[in-house]
Amino acid sequence: MVKIRINERRSIGDGEPVFIIAEAGANHNRDKKLAFELIDAAADAKADAIKFQIYSANTLYSKEAPRFSKDSLRPWDLIKAVETPRNWIPELKEYSDKKGLIFFATPFDFDAVDELEAVGTEIYKIASFEIVDLDLIHYVSSKQKPTIISTGLSNLEEIEDAYLAYKSTGNNKLVFLQCASLYPSKPEIMNLRAITSVRSAFNTITGLSDHTVGIHISVAAVAMGASVIEKHFTLDRNMKGPDHPFAVEPNELSQMISNIRDTEKAFGDGLKI
Image: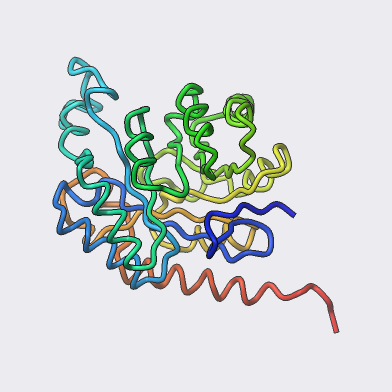
């Protein structure tokens, strides 16, 4: 049995309900009112947690980094336009607590970790693109909190490097998420069987960070043994911003969570009588 306790009310892993994360990410568009409305929507949908991302353009990209395409913004300009203001963190945590959600975030630098620690975050997330930042993984692990690491773009050796860096602090509270780092992702690249492969390789809790369009792949992942589901959501897919087009809207998030709970009920005990 592999199980991780987040707090006195919630654990993740064997014998526990699937831990469902409503990924707000940057879909607040730097509008605090919209950020609070995302928290409301996640609570109404009965998600377990809401997650934001804490990064700074200055620490992620050079201002000289080339555009992804001729029609796109420079990476620095894109990130600067959607980064979460760090002075929001205490208010987002307080309001999430009030709504009964576990608040946490993906830190992309040491300062972000410290800022999340200051508000008493109970869990961390490492993004796929940071799985090779072993210093950041070690620093997060040193806080001795449960941590979820997405594994998009990485092979088994890179996952092992992250695993060893994390465990070097004596912290065993680790979750790996299968992920395809394409936005949106097509079903044929999702490789849901990797959920089982990674769990077998490292004896960790595993799940899915789902960037596909729709909700059916997340439900399928639960049927295949995912203990954690992370799904981007937005109030309106027509909003401007990099993550809105592939995110689910509140009614879809609610339906996905309902379907996952029904799937859990349908597992049964395997006895044929």
